[in-house]
Amino acid sequence: MDHVQGLFPLRWGVGAPIPVFGPPDPEGCDDLFKHPGLLDFSHTVEPFVVFTLQGLRVTPLPLNHSKLTYGYLLESAHSRVAWLSDTAGLPEKTLKFLLNNQPQAIVIDCSHEPRPQPPRNHCDLNTVRAINQVLACPRVILTHISHRFDLWMMEHPLPPGFEAGYDGMEIVLD
Image (spheres, rainbow, N blue to C red):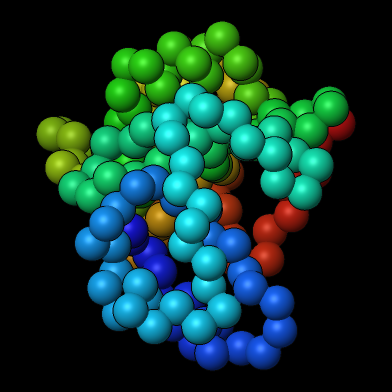
């Protein structure tokens, strides 16, 4: 598991158990597994096996990262959004799946400004542009942005259809 810092205080809440969905990771974050509190880690998901969560169809998608990491295709009756954080490019199977299931928006890891060589664990803008040349998604929302890339964006425009995500952002699809 990666990016779980927000779960530490949440586990000591009061009320019903909170289901946590993610890849099988027996080691995960040991302290969270030893002392889960309200957190229910029994909801292990597998790549490309759809499950339903609060009326949405959710498809786990393998990503390229140093730890086992999934992105997700979230589908309602009329909309599709791909959440692809913590990845360096996309595995071929994930790219093909998204090509066959055309999301209206992708929210994707883009930690770095354009670089001559792709980074090891996260995307740069060149990598995201190459992915979207294949997917042709009309809306690309960049996330997992580094301070350096944030500064770069202040001085350079993003490609058409690309935008920086931000805390509290709501994605509205037609």
